[in-house]
Image (cartoon, rainbow, N blue to C red; front, side, top):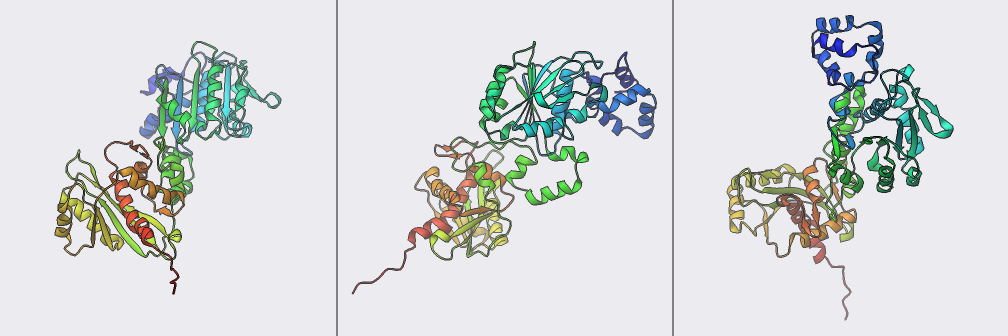
Length: 470
């Protein structure tokens, strides 16, 4: 975009505070990348009215993920991490729906639903928040808050009414031509509220919804994203780093780096669990341990790959430590590392397994030999002739082996070090019907073998002292 083109776009009989033409989209990024002379020329050629309007031309300042996709759609889902700029995107979208070229001109929509989890969150975040509708609106277009009727009224007559997920039936009766839905994924009555909103979106030629949310693995969000009439944008927290305290980013990344919680809350990634999964995201989020105990034993579980190459299965290599003092019900384990490799030669995965033992001070390597047979032990001993190796044969299916391990997690007896996201993703795809991800669950297999060796088999052999009869 040239300076002159920008001038032609921004000038007119009336300068709008919301511009939907392509010419100014993310224009600030263009200006910011030019040298000082071009920046000065751009600003110096703006008249007083244009300078006053420029701060409110959101399309000029917005990041790409904050702007709705072009084309035909019914629902735009703006997924993002905490602080990624979702609220600003939603508030500005509402402005674009209700505002006209001049303060009293009608916009595309006249009746808008503002739907949040509670009245307080709608009022304090969506309306009065730092990035809410009132903060984003220029003075001559700023709506008035009517507290008694719980609604915003614009100078041009457009109205936005407040509704909450705590009262889905409150959406019975009203009708709208647009809606802004905030934090859908955290609503306890999400599906019921969403359904009622769909019945209420019956005004105008093309009623639309903007959904701004941090993702969570809930059915209402997954179904919405799968709909052919839904479009989405996405951004991690760091995308909006310029508007966030640097200490905030440093602190949360240091505290949560490598966890599933960070992927969801900071990266804005939807972590989907398979239906009926043996492990769930919620369960695993409570497994993270910050400090490690002194372990009685450490083992490395190995699920070897029988082929090598880019298309081959992974070779699962998982390190687990255990504290086994006292009776079995007091034993605890911590998954320390996932050293899985993919596409490696037999010598490559054998070396990776031995290196994992050395790095973590493991006293045994437990390797499944169903596929490789004697070859597995021979390859490992070529790397380390003295390796402490236990070869195991799978006589039961993967699910049968995994279920008692999942029970340990349900009892709170297994913790996770940070940095195990790929393993945890596989775990959330393991169901009673089998593995519902792509490929083979090699990481889970390695984990299962390690925990069988450390907790399940020793517990089966453990006996309380008996009393001898004379």
